[in-house]
Image 1 (tube, chains in turn purple, cyan):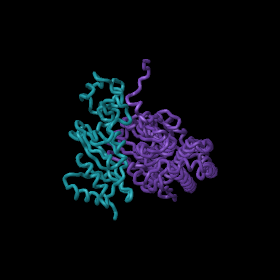
Image 2 (cartoon, one colour; image 1 turned 120 degrees about the horizontal axis):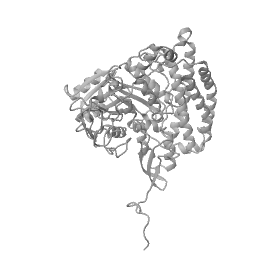
Image 3 (tube, chains in turn purple, green; image 1 turned 60 degrees about the vertical axis):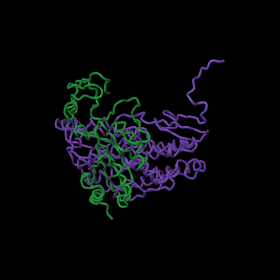
Length: 407
Length: 196
């Protein structure tokens, strides 16, 4: 009798299903996450998700960091739209510290946040295209994400992990180039988005691939804690921007697109429509910003010297400003004690910050409500009984960002 | 009908009695503290009541207060009534020695991973949870890192002093006996494996 060389796991001969590891580093996962799928032929019998591959203990680190040092941590949550995270964090701080921001700051923030939302949806929707075999759209819209990154660059100096803004406003006023680039974006992007939609929306192959894939009812979506476009695709018109307006969103006219079936196709349509709405918000905000005249047109931060960092040129030339800069950065200004929960409409859902302060320099406890951590647990329910190729398209249409999931 | 904090407080007091719950309000948000064994009853009541309808679990997380004897570990639920757009915070406290809390995962599917995360970081034992295992940290980890007795930085460092961060040397844990050996006054870590 021949010697047996391969040791098979117990029960693997009798087993009629196949185990497939989708991830952690698989081209289709778009991030570091593992799905252990049990397949019967090409049908998914069960799935188990393993996450935490890029866990960086942000909540623990934040307990040792003063407010400004936490902003770079928030960059690395949803890195496709980090300005929203930064501003969500600054808004949370402002709520705790009682800082009121001027209208112009609010409008400038809205311009940046909506640009970030567009860049996030752009990536998500074009990746849905890539995963269903349509690569063209992805490459085509990339240059407009590049333009959005150039606008960030004019405003804050960096592109992906932006660390944009300060408590109370921005680090500097928007320069002319920034406004020109925003204008360029407003002029050129609608045509591109229209063309992007033409590629997909009524594309027979795309529709067949996405309609009915990964559908979820409104009731289940709410029970699973869905927020953002994924919840709206299921037919619930919940949007933090409207429900609890922050940063003067109440001054703007825009619609909240909703779907009905909660499948990949509806999620795609909702995101596309949201990009149109974001464009309209940016246009309105852009006009409102132009209306400020005289000294008002130079306001780009609230007058809160306790929390707002002094001008860089003063820091480099004046002793007092340098000292003050370090006092703020090292958190020598005590926070008031209290508990705050503040949320903003992130690109993929309600991004919440639960901040417990005991009056020290650093948060006593900071918890991030990360939307995709919460809705990823529905993944098994979404793909059970579906084909393997559906699993991949469902994953990309949920807009999972590993950085946010693992915090 | 306007769903006000006073109304919620009154409904809860009528249902559970005066002595059981305590209330506070911060930044306009009502915060209810309930006994740990009542957490599901309170949440079910908030869920089912025709007027309250808190049917969305926004968030769930743990907090560690080592100075509160007998109720060191807190679990904080952020509930949301989306129709009336009212939020509510529910808190319960359990002793660090016996952190047993009933799971909310039967009521909210969303609670499943949130509770796993809370277990992962605070070691809270959610009774009845279908799959209570670590989610973000490695399975081999044998402590609960967000508890305050595990300071962030390497305890063998002597060039840094936690006093600079407003809460005194070694966050008041200078001489406490931990599960992993003694952390001495100087912050030197003896015996047990090093805390990372």
